[in-house]
Length: 639
Image (tube, rainbow, N blue to C red):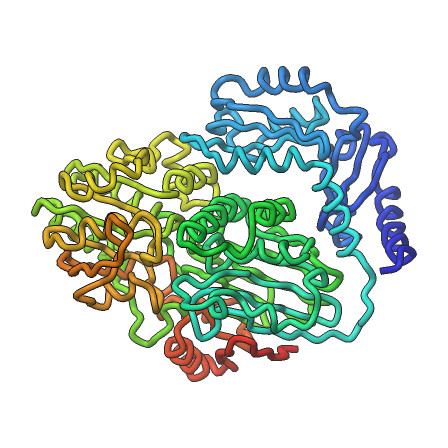
């Protein structure tokens, strides 16, 4: 990239800005900041008073603009903190005020909005005008989150590195196009004809974008466990961007590996996904080591991935390369999950990648978005894509779940629910809390293991992206996650006692029984016919969960001495399919039918081969579109 070309682009941007910014704002500096342009002013109030000025500039330069106060004009931190406390009062449960000098931001960490009313409160604008600091409200969950604290500390300690990184990203995004005639190819690196290791490379004449970078639970060898990055014929530093759809390991578990081997570009995702990812990747390294294997990356690689993450809001349009714009939309799958829309060139081609999505409202989340401006190529999941993958109505699934729990408890048994730490666990917590309140279940302790404490804290930190009913419950202190029957303070030495003690409910990862504390509980409970195991999420081929759900009479587990032992499956095995965070066959088809425009091409992935073929065949017949699956390492030109 020639410095001259970059300077020419920056000169063009500056001309628009200096022509538009009122003199009284006293503009001092214009610089790239990731996908945005940052304006530093001695008197930003003069510019922010008329929001149409910023909107007009952003439209002209086709880039989002952030207005910051020139560092020389920032109110001293001690005075600013005093003013913030006086302005907000005691009603918000203020926990801490953290200043970020490098970006001129002040993070206000509090338990509730109180007089603010919401994240766009006039009080926050008042604080910005009076102090010069740009306030960011961060909701502190009712229970402490070590993950949130760790991320804030990392970002603050590495402020200079982060600032340099964002400047380099901006320069890369605004480099001149070399090739005007575009093409678009899609290369399958993982998650095709299978569930796991999702990864897709989208390549144009000028850009390379990676969609997801996951691992495969239950893989029998390393070649099948990770994406086939060996299929790409360029260095990792040639990647323009990585976009992560959501924080399940099969979509983001391999991301730090890219940084281990030289990638230093941006990673885009929602903020909840960033926080959950940090927690789950750290846990993945720990579990891999405890299993006697070496993790594919280390702590420094995982931290580097975090430092290179640029969180986006739903609906926020950003440039991620010279010819690609990205927008994330709610996917309804888990907290922070996103459908990715890629706008390529001047509208020559548009790709929508669903990741995992749920096209129905749940207790936890609103259903997936379908209102995309344009879509010529759709890449969609098919976890439940077969003809007979029709789930019972959600109300019936909840009734079946509560009934299975009730019967087990009344017969003196204990209920084991293997759960993914993110998504199903919190959905079930809301259902159980309602059942306790309605007296549909006897008063019983629900013991939660593993990462459930931390992941639930992160859900409570982001009520604004939860379902409307759940969001309002949290806002008005009727938080179902804090129900008195829930116990999230367990020790390893408690497991055998709980598994053989009084009737109770135990929720523990891993959801597919591929590891985690659920295996400990299973060996203590599996040979007691009074007990039940309830599966509420997808069980991938090759996992222990799949084996038990399919009716295995015996299983192999480690005993107390760490030796392989055969256990008889005497406990009741109860699969409940209507509570999944994935769309069933009917919802998958409805999603496509309700898109604003009919795609020309539909690439079906994230499913077993039979389900992919079944769904693709039906879409071809029903909608008369070119629908098909790919094999891992296949590539296809879509434009």
